[in-house]
Image (cartoon, rainbow, N blue to C red; front, side):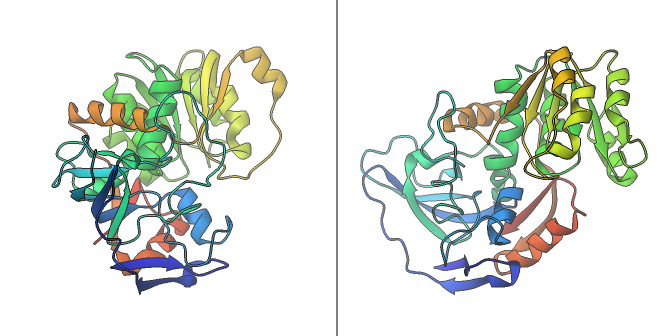
Length: 334
């Protein structure tokens, strides 16, 4: 089978297409999946760029979607022909968070899904949402589930809530779509007026250009009449102070990303006065993904895919991500 691998110590020019042995028939409790798509995430970029070192020859990519070709003995969740999508934490089935590293995350601690075929435990996949093509399905593993967990599982999102979404990347656009699906009002921030107009077209109730309005946190607070109920915080230390300004007293901030750095100052006094809940999170469990898929099965909602690349163009796909020009998700299909 064909597979993209990453030569140590990493870097976009060290991705290459190779032939790997076919993984064969699935054993007990396993499934064989013919993969057709993956999608790019900031975590994947950290691995392939060499910022998050992995083993020489690693197959990258945490997201993977395709068709079940065969099932092993004892597998009852799937049958040949089912469309399936991978789980970011294949060993975290349900319950509270138990994983604090990426030792078992595909494309990082173990081989990922930038390949044609994989044999894996059935519990490392869920069914894909009904009606989704493989590229669309691949976007739910990391970005979609992260947004779902932040807003619905951790945040308890309900109709009438007010949500602030930072930026227009994969997690953020998914958060906008989920929030609107649930009947919430949403404000989106971006440095691009063109992207903000696209966010409006997706249902954003208000938009703010953070480059021209450095005090965007106060503007969000005022727009919501005393602060938003939820902030989807993907920036990290460079934006957290503004997110704290934006949230209401007793509100919820989902700390998802570190785009502006891994550490920094936190205005602890303001955070205390706000009595807000700051919840760090990394994606979610298989049970959360199954619940998310069930919600999507009943909704007229499709993820926003900015652009698709071929498997042997994976490096170019990451260069496109690196440019910051994308809106929503970047997919790779084969």
